[in-house]
Amino acid sequence: MAQALPRNVELAVERIRRALGTAGCILDRDRIAPFEVDFRALYHGATPLVACPASTAETAEVLAICNDLGVGVVPHGGNTSYCGGATPGEAGTDVVLSLARLNRIREVDPANFSMIAEAGCILADVQSAAERADRFFPLSLGAEGSCQIGGNLSTNAGGLNALRYGVARELVLGLEVVLADGRVLDGLTSLRKDNTGYDLRDLFIGAEGTLGVITAASLKLFPRPRTIETAFLAVRDPAAAVELLARLRAATGDAVTSFEYLPRIAVEFTVRHIPGVADPLDRPFESYVLCEISSAREDPALRSILEASLEEAMHAGLVLDAAIAESIAQRNALWRLRESVPEAQRAEGASIKHDVAVPVAALPEFMRVATAAVLAIVPNGRMVAYGHVGDGNLHFNVSEPVGGDAAFAARSSDIQAAVHDIVRRFRGSISAEHGIGRLKREELARHEGPLALELMHSIKRALDPKGIMNPGKVLAPEAAPQSSKESRP
Ligand code: 2HG
Ligand code: ZN
Image (cartoon, rainbow, N blue to C red; front, side):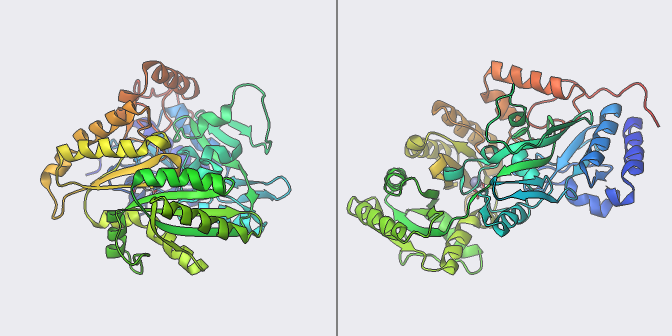
């Protein structure tokens, strides 16, 4: 039998139902179920209600009610988080706040190279709206067909074009945020320059909904790329990849948009598991790079610059073989291979993921040292280290041994600790683009300096004194959220 809800939660549910009506609430157990588990099925929480406000004002009402009653609120976008950031707690007392109905593009301003999108807009729809105005919104990632821009900003997503255009934070001009107590912070400007006081906007980006709820964002747009060259390269090793990146950045006048590293095993996984993916080269190599250069001009010279640079790199022994896309279909096929690595890795069984960053030049040494450390713990583990080498960001993943191995899961925290300790030696990051969520909360506490942690807790207390915003994510709760003594009906 389902357990009775605490009185404050019951009251919150009642009041939210009244405020949003039936269209704005999901109460049906079957429809609630997908909101209770994260994308990787690492966390299984429970919620009495998914609130689906259709406006900023309704979002504010939900938060005011929950703050008043001391009830936790878990903002929920496209549910593509890797760290359990959008999953309610196991106690079943957090309300889930879906942003899906806040999905209007409020404005596209081609002259100002900006647009205003609500948090629940699907990333691919934001990209298309920009394209219709002959503009480009560069944030791009495998989940773009289902992730929402509010979630992208709340986790400060990186993706495939960060090398040239920056991570999500760098693409934001202004934000509209509902604070924990329901007040609305209207910072929705489209200015390039604004030095008026502390930068409040940047506090909410990457805060994973623990400080407030982003309801809309003013986003930077760029000229649409008109010439794009995409190449799939076999490289000698990771050090060759790093050297090639520097050469290409210089030779193309910094036109390298993406620079993704793939080990052989990642190509094998995708060829094996993803229908239609084929090895782009005739014979196997140890290491690959998928690289894209682009220009906002019609620029036939880009192709010859790329070819000349690759020829030089071949003479220098950095590049061993190359395939340059000759059509959009070929380009799409190369990106499909890259973007389906996570899915292909899932098909190979359990894996341990590390989303780390070190300075680009240190990547080869990091990979060598960290690989040895992992294999010392699980000698048959399969290293699948790939990703955004251009940003120094590797998905330093380990797949379980072929045929599975019960000991693998048991050693996962040892493996993670070993990898993260090495990251620290390189002054790197233990979460380069996926966030902290619930998954890396303890690792954040272990790695972040005491002063930085103290400041983070102070900011949390200042903006969310009752601890209702996405409880237990990013930072461990300091104290149980207090219920308010009285509650208005
Ligand atoms: C990617 O770059 C994603 O494909 C997922 O960030 C990484 O599965 C992963 O570890
Ligand atoms: Zn990634």
